[in-house]
Image (cartoon, rainbow, N blue to C red; front, side, top):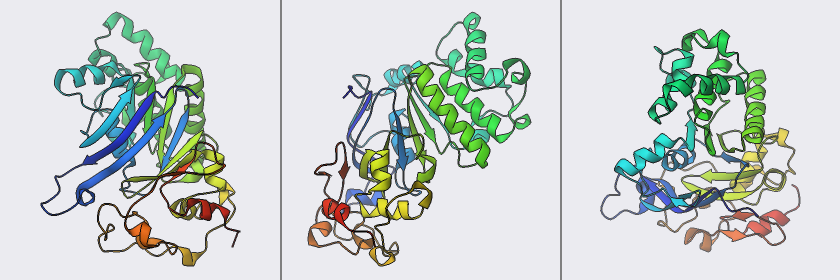
Length: 333
């Protein structure tokens, strides 16, 4: 197994300090997350809105500060960088983030050439070298630099805008690329084009790519591994085929049941999952399993402490569930 390019350990992020007398979960966007990204792999991160997926990416690139935990990238601890050190790291462009809405993230008053060259200027690349790098990046995403370089974002289609956002990200020659919902606003043909493009870029450029998604089916044909988030916690990780066909956490089972195209063995019955509660999702304190209030199989241990367990006979898999092995052994309903 290769040395991880990115190693995140016990990472927690809060957007507002917890009030006196309350636990970390009250204001937490991420809670005690440990995760690795390997060189050259595509890792899919899936979960519902508010589960912490985008916060993980923003913390890695330095847009939000961790409350606790460490972020080690390419052997260097970047989680605690501040001031000039953080600015130097961000300007290096070694970790890039492609935002969900390319139209909003592209300056409407700049041309494509200016947009793609901007990270190079910020990073101190001499102007004499910028043009060749910009043309290379635009070409790598399947567009003609001569035909599109002088256009404004509003003159592009949705698929073209997404590819220009990718070109701006790869122009710095990063080692790690986060893509936040890169195909959510695209039609089916453009979705397939962008996903195929990401797969080709990781192979040609040696990139590690993290794709954030709501939808498991978009990850089925491209990801090497999947990480599942639920309410600020990482609840399951593993090789894509294993996770999609044999989910080990009840929440992952709920996701696969809603995406029949991934071809999982149906192990979920409607009675197994309760509606999301309106009340505090952590009713028994910060140690409770975040899914306990929705899981028919929850027992006392689930309401007292979460658990991350290696699964017997399942390589490289983990699930934050006390009954993960039992869940895997269930017969189809």
